[in-house]
Image 1 (cartoon, one colour):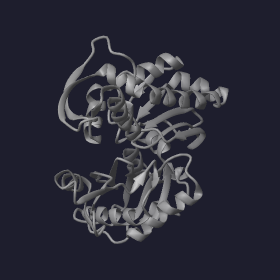
Image 2 (tube, rainbow, N blue to C red):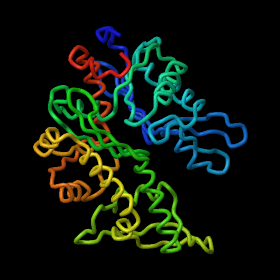
Image 3 (cartoon, rainbow, N blue to C red):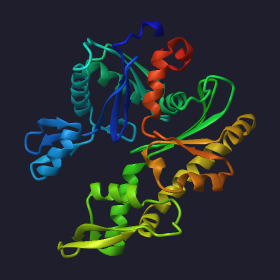
Length: 339
């Protein structure tokens, strides 16, 4: 592949468990939508995608079902993914005239060759002309303006909706990397399970996510936060209001926080000494929606002894890096997996 062939109508895509972001070369990010489809319960007909799908599901929960096309960084439903991407391409085509665009897409570490080929195939089926892959942590490093192509060790930790990735990068390659199917959705489910078991209180996935964002914490807070939540008494099904605290959120999610930190420590333990010295100097970089849990950066710094930085736009690091690769093709051509 000659990367100079990429033109202003070609796309960068960050397709995650929670959201898909699309960027156009020289234009920037042009679309962000939830990675979800709404389908008729009886006929399985796809009715809407993205934010419109969520609205439809919330308004008609008995007749409309949710379909998640992408899960844990890989395709969960092949047909739904093609339909989803076709509609995404149609939405983007309202901004530019495009025909079979070339696509640069981020893929997680640890996925198989078969899973990579499946991602390429669904994009081609959806209307892409050519598809090229970059590991997400490497793209994120570019998006964070880190020097990933030199002989200098950088560590990226990406806590996404369905997967956590930890990668040590040097010379544009993954030196050491690990991933686990732990992410924001597991945190949400842990909150639901905890409140049901400990407090006999039932809430929806949406409420759990909001509690995680508003009250979630990796360590107990000096001043406890709380808010009143609407739910049901699980034994009787009677609606009720209950005061939920950040202490509850910490107890609900502390086992997953430990797993994430253990994954980081395992990665560090397998890193060559010369790159470990670079990481000690450069720090650890956190990205992904799950990285925004209160005090997680401080807990990681305390546990590892390494300065930890939380990205300001933690959900956009990958797509920004992919766009930089498109816009600086000669500089970053060796980052492409299937060039």
